[in-house]
Length: 64
Image (cartoon, rainbow, N blue to C red; front, side, top):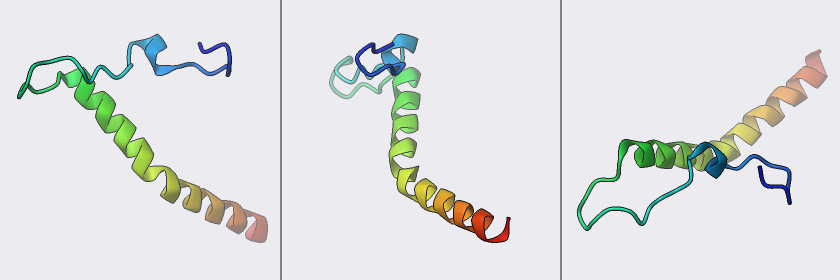
């Protein structure tokens, strides 16, 4: 846990990014690939998710 912000960090679970490991031309391990995929999906889907949540909230306020 990061005590300055009170958040649980990914390095606590061993999901920190180790992008400097490996030789030239070597594929990263499955753990690094999954971590990068999850990070990329979270980054790309952030704005559409905010939009969908906003529309849902407005519809719930209008139509109960």
